[in-house]
Amino acid sequence: MNRNIVVLSPHFPPHYHRFWAQVRQAGANALGIGDQPADALPHELRSALTEYYFVADMRDYDALVRACGHFTHRYGKIDRFDSLNEYWLGAEARIRDDFNIPGVRTADIDVIRRKSKMKERFRQAGVTVARGRVVQTPADARALAAETGYPLIAKPDIGVGALDTFRIDSEADLEAFFSAKPPVDYLMEEFIAGTIHSFDGLADAAGNPLFLTGHVFSQGIMETVNEARHIHYTSMREIPAELERIGRSCLKSFEVRERFFHIEFFRTATGGYVALEVNMRPPGGYTTDMFNYTADIDIYRAWAELVVHGRADLDYRRAYHCCYASRKHTTRYAHSHEEILGRYGRLMLQVESVPGVFSSALGDIGYIFRSPELEQIDEVVRFIHAPAPPG
Image (cartoon, rainbow, N blue to C red):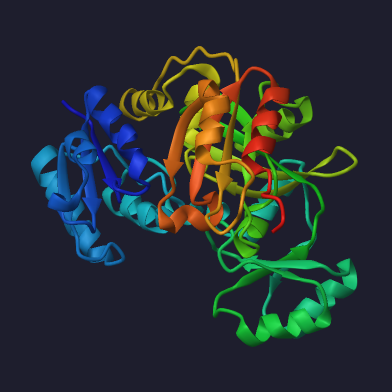
């Protein structure tokens, strides 16, 4: 009997059709539910799916239930339900509850969705966290500021990326924040100075990393979005021992099973790590492609084999550093696109025109390239981001 993998919002992000195609290659049905008319889907996605069910509004939970009922009637029991997308974590959990599907359930969802709950699990893992808490009033925030001093960072307790995240440097900033604060719970915490390091990969059904890597970011997504900067981030060939130790401890504390993970830390000037947040999904942008380029693997196939058969054999070695470097249309650069390809084309793997919904974080164009030498990666980044001379 074929296994049935139901995918919510299979058209987003656009390159995730590679996951669903591998589900079918692994011998299962890939069943999509989305709000794009079927005839508007790209050919690559249509051919990847066994069947597609259109719903006018994916926030209409009853419509999702009807779609799953349709698939159950046609194909039998649903074995997995996922989107690989943080936005739909709550809907996924409710469907798993109602159709008795393995995976994260509603009772457990806040731990991987609410940043305030994440702090508790980080502490259980023995990892340092920034001082902070959910604040309801200006008085709450002033009390925190009295403990930590400014600056403070305010971010939605439930939120994706750096959306509606603010840096607060003074009492005036605090008053301005509360005068325009969106009507949701906000976590406020001390500002931590450091470089963002991530611990990334895919955990198997027992919670062990099937694939493991890490990345170093030029700056945080908050600065990238709020200040309209370009960004670059680079995979590590060797993961620092302490980062791997605390990363593996977090996998146990958060009970990560049969899922991708993207765990972010600040590495401070003293060399210590402070936990930022967890994301139980693939890292954003084109990072799954970068997984493949670092070790010449197929992470799409590995994930599909895992969810379809409960296992995957992945023997790998991180042979390359892989880097994503973006450019913004609003920034003048010293070197043209043609000059970049002319000088470093042999290292380039992908050049992406970034869809508008991602451009605030990932730039308007993204270059993905690799080299076994970090010095060469840094050289290419400097060339891509070199500013045009004034005038």
